[in-house]
Image (cartoon, rainbow, N blue to C red; front, side, top):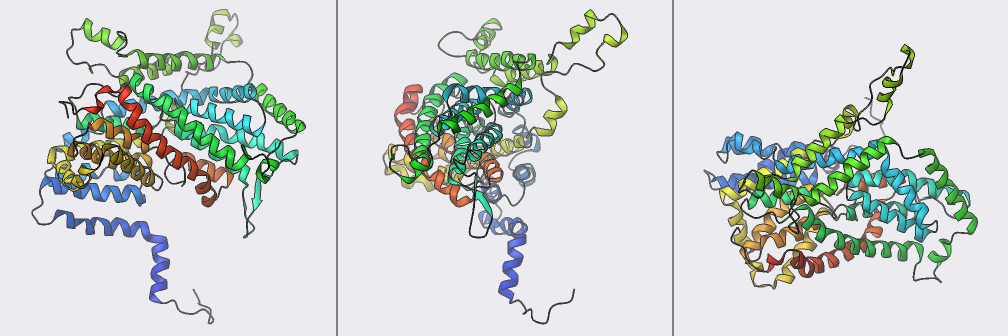
Length: 557
């Protein structure tokens, strides 16, 4: 290629900048494993040093995403057997266990709601019931997204609200009450403030809703699995009922403060004389137009289908059965099985068995009643020509199911198990002795702030995988119940509000609504601050009510 005579030659520094901008991921893949060899010194390295080496490399790869997150999770399968840390069989067991099956089962159950379209019906019903002003619409959206996100993935709950938000905002724009997009200095279309408010409220509600139940988001199952791996002799402290007994009230408070911040900043609530409040006023004609649009979209859904009815029965039944397995308030069906077979292991039957059963039934039961036309058919043309589809479609599920995240869970479990067996946890604990003199309430605050800040710039699941084992060891070193610190770090790892990289939901709304990162940071600052404070108070004061043993160091620890 001929170079223009006017084009100056690039200096070495400039050439390096251009090369690094394009190939920085590849460079990290080479440089990080080489630099991390320092952890192995002096040679020959002990097993805990190889585990630390694996931890450092995986942590940097997970945070930078220089290679796909699930691929990073294969590193223990490579490093541990070759370095004598653990056998291949033992390492691979971490990738297929109760928590992984529970994660897969919860995803499969969630996709039944999406495939049937039941989640859209719930959203439209909530909007119709609450109203059509900005305050009412945002409140309705917050409630329905939070509720749906308790049962399906945060990303799916956020994605559900994208077309609904656009439909409502488009009506208001046609009435000349707002602008969906505005133009920046470069002439590019970007989301207006009110658009940013609607879409960020959706993804933030989904993030908060995920902490309400054990199956709400992957991080919940990750920190439960890490806790079980680290303390196999502990009783079932993170059961479905206990988890939700803490998570649901805590979730509602977080939602309230998040919504209030968005309403005050973007709608002018409590600031009636501000320019924001004046701009956000919606005329009666605008409300009527929005109502007409929502009712039109809802009418297109038609009556409740048999498919949706089956999802309600199976999915709703599964949620009730999760609570009733071993509620500890009364004898659950899991307790009855233990008594019948005279089993001494209280954790013999777990939620993963139920999730697998209901998922199996969703592939077995039909999504419509066309089969019964065979009973009434008199002529050849009266018989159905195709098979009756099941409640869940296997091909569609396989195309959409993010099963690669199971490797991410497994990699974290393998790392945690090796850190426990090789004594790495104790070595890390020696560096955490500096916090021993601080009051427990201060240490919890430091931990929560640290985890929330890190999870804003890295994958939630990856942050949970790395920091939860460290928090458990920190608790042991300063003489506190490890469960307390698991709850603090585990819940905190879900709260990515300011940056799009931490959670897929943020990426969904940023790409769909063209929200600049600066605007997302502004929208997320308030929820980040209120979440840190509410989490701190809830973990310190409310968690010991749900788990009374938190104030003592149990024998299993």
